[in-house]
Length: 164
Image (tube, rainbow, N blue to C red; front, side):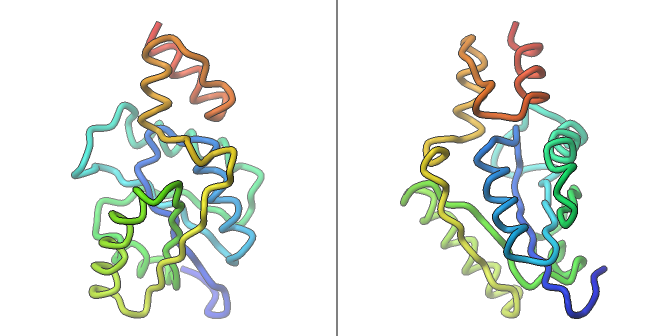
């Protein structure tokens, strides 16, 4: 799905909801790679989602509309199979703290076993987003806290609708 000279990376995640931290990592990856495919996990085996996959995709597409080399697509396969579909050479993940590393390290090793030609690249969270998580945003919104500076405006509006 890409020119053989282009280098494509996949940024996988549940994005439930997308945060400014996610967008920061995705855009930084966009500056490093010719194409970035944001892979939205359709059904997470680890957690239930608040937003439908269509809503999560819409939030991402609206937020990334001005980033021409970034595509958003849902997937419900093995991550390595999704990456192969796009001809990706790398998986890009963000790390906030050492606690993220343990899980991500295990996933990288499993992905390496399944697809030795696919590299995993970690980008450290920007300091202003190092505390930010989707679950934290949902909890703040649930109890009436302000999330406008943590998530894109459409996400903040939808959270307000859900938790009024």
